[in-house]
Every structure is written in structure tokens, then in C-alpha cells.
Amino acid sequence: MNALSQDLYGDRLLELPQERALLDVYKPTRTPEEFRSRVASIATICTLNMGLLQRKLGTDAPADAGSFMLLDVFLQKIATIEQATSVCGPLKNINHLRKGFPTHGDNAKQFLRAHHFFKLTYPIENYAARCWASIHSACSASLSHSRTSSSKPALTVESCVS
Image (cartoon, rainbow, N blue to C red; front, side, top):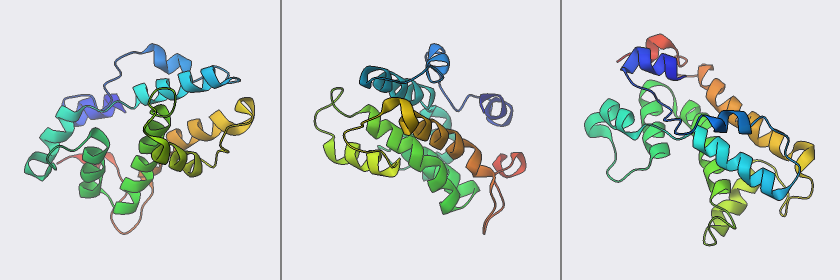
């Protein structure tokens, strides 16, 4: 993704502030601590380059928007609303999981909504079974789902060049 972004826009889309997070998401997840670590790692991987998104959106960039909102607006410009939602939904909900207790104590509503989004029980009863696999595959799908077509052309190299 960063190679394509670099080629098309001259900059990386994913900041990737710590590359060790790439290894961490593939480790086994058996305990609440390991689960929180994996969620934090995948959220780190999904840290977006806000400067790039703001440059690409120009005056269309909403004031005081966060990185996922900027990505959503950008994707809606080059694809469909459905495609933008399929990419941004899992990423936003991973971030809501990351901000759950004990990281933050005031995010219960979004934290529980993220559990529902990923079809996770609350509290999580079995971290080793499908819990982490569900989140990991949803994130992978969100990044690859953007190639599906609908009323607008699929997200391709050609549609991203502007």
C-alpha cells in the first residue's frame, strides 16, 4: 500500500511509526494482555498520513477532521460511499477497541459498539479461538475490499491518480 501511495502521490499513506507492530499482529493471542497488545499494534499499523490526505483533499478537507474522516472523504471522492465505508469501518472500530479500558475509561459506548461490529462477545471469553482472527481478517478485508466495483469504478491505480 505504501509503495503504491508513494508512486501515485509521492508520500506514504500509512505512517508506520513502529515496524515491530507488523510482527506483533501475527503472534498468538491467548490472554487479555496479548489481545490489547495486538489491537494496539494493528492500530499503529493503520496510523494514516494526515498531511498527505489533507494535501489530496485540499479545500475539501473538513476542518478539525481526524485521519479516518479524511480517509473516508478522500475515498468517497475516488470511489463509492459503500467502498469508503467498507475500508474505514473496520479501521475506526479497531481504534475504538484500542481506546477501551484500561487504555481509556471514558469510551465505553464506542468500545461496546466495536465489539458488536466485530461480532465479539463482551466480555471476551476466548481470546485464542476466533476473537483476534475476526479483527485481523476484518482489517485485511477492509484494505482489499476497496477493489470491488459498484456504481463508481473500482478503486484502482487509474482511479487514484488525480
